[in-house]
Length: 361
Ligand code: IPM
Ligand code: MG
Image (cartoon, rainbow, N blue to C red; front, side):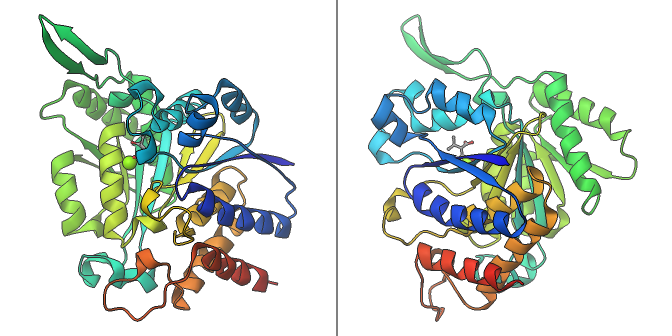
């Protein structure tokens, strides 16, 4: 029996999570995995119901399950709310409480979607990179932080701070991942300016001695941002601190064509995993059955891979998504102006993936 907590959240979160759930249930059944699914609130919907973006009770439930499947949080409705109560704080809290320090964001190109990228096809074809973002440290959580008044002048502060063990454990995840891929790790930093990044370089170099079979490169974050649009194929595994990873993972996602396609896994040291699409809550199209559920569905594939170690189940989901795309099925976000596809809705896209999965004997 595997226990999973669903946290659909806000905006298009509930719609895409509903489709992901159907895939999860079907594939679990095919592989004789018994599921115990439970659902709870996070983000703006939790603020509306309880006054806070994530309750202690939901945190406690999340700590008891085998995996968490999340939709998205946030929206303009909660824009005016105090900083410590924002929907995003729910997401940050659950990452921290579950110790999910390793955020895996694969950016791959689906053959059928090569034309959806704003970059030239020859630049895009064959992109297969994995951003491994540190998720529970750095500027997002460092102290001191806040806004204070110094001699009548207001001052805002955040702190980028890392202990060496935090750097080492995320770097280890990167080297291990690279071993199963093209054996290349690029550490992204700003060590020409930031002391904290100098420590990263030292710790990464030290750990690299344990992985002589993996090629290591260090890359400044600004230059990495440039190389990602110039020649993204050179990257295999990128490992970096929280804030750089936030920015670069959006960039990496977009060069593949659509933010609507990219899944993610956030993993802790005790085998805990939280899975979510990289795209946000897209409030402008929420509730209209227009959202692309494929990133959420691909997040389910990552769940089977990392939390259940069911690689075949994961591959089936990835293949099913590939097939629906080559059949010409498209939600609106992955149709470019001038293309002749007829957009289908979120549910219809879920139906299409389920159909492919059911066709497997
Ligand atoms: C992400 C998002 C979050 C982050 C926000 C919603 C807090 O941008 O998962 O990349 O900054 O980590
Ligand atoms: Mg982000």
